[in-house]
Amino acid sequence: MLEVNQLEVSYGTIKALHGVSLKVPEKSIVTLIGANGAGKSTTLRAISGLIRAGGGQVKYDGKEITNQSPHAVVSKGLCHVPEGRMVFANLTVEENLRMGAYLRRDKAGIKEDVDYAFTMFPRLKERISQLAGTLSGGEQQMLAIARALMSKPKCLMLDEPSLGIAPMLVRAIFDQIVKINKERGLTILLVEQNANLALAISHYGYVLETGKVILEDSAAALRQNPQVREAYLGD
Ligand SMILES: Nc1ncnc2c1ncn2[C@@H]1O[C@H](COP(=O)(O)OP(=O)(O)O)[C@@H](O)[C@H]1O
Ligand SMILES: [Mg+2]
Image (cartoon, rainbow, N blue to C red; front, side, top):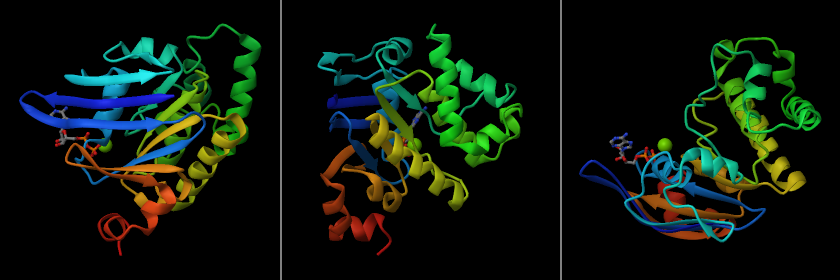
């Protein structure tokens, strides 16, 4: 469904991605793991059109979308939840969710999806009128994911959803990621520094090191791989 071929990205004169290739098949959860600075966020930003790819190709649903505008990418059903959550701090939880549906006109469907978001994350329902900026980090991450789902994406890209979040909320978020994948057939590209967590819920994984994919395999095989265990799983 999503296919990246030989993607290259530079920041000024510094090359961050040296020909990254990966595939995310429909209805699967694929993870991209790697240390801080490996190029994980850069990969997602280039796919979403937030930064320019200097080389290579991004294909979605069989069509090339390389260097299209972020707006065009979202409207095709590919939605990116960036690192650091980025909710609208001065809007309430409910207003944030409705902002996520800005491209939609189906009022009944929007209402249904707001309700679905609240079943996914009951903590958000309890805080429906609270300003997003006053939520805890974990709650903001829940809101960012729920807001992304309001655009009815077919493919969701999540950038480090566990970063800086209390373990109990991480658990709740990862359980829901698995659930939307199973129940709604949502395709997921999950970027994580926490390889343990990511490989536990993914079908397939890629290991990124200094802008290159150095390993790829089923998530189960990566968890057994001695190189991965030593470098990323804390063995
Ligand atoms: N806006 C930027 N300007 C310059 N260099 C950047 C910028 N963003 C990221 N980089 C560099 O690109 C490389 C990859 O960064 P990033 O994609 O954020 O890694 P990751 O998400 O895996 O931690 C790093 O060397 C980082 O310093
Ligand atoms: Mg990052």
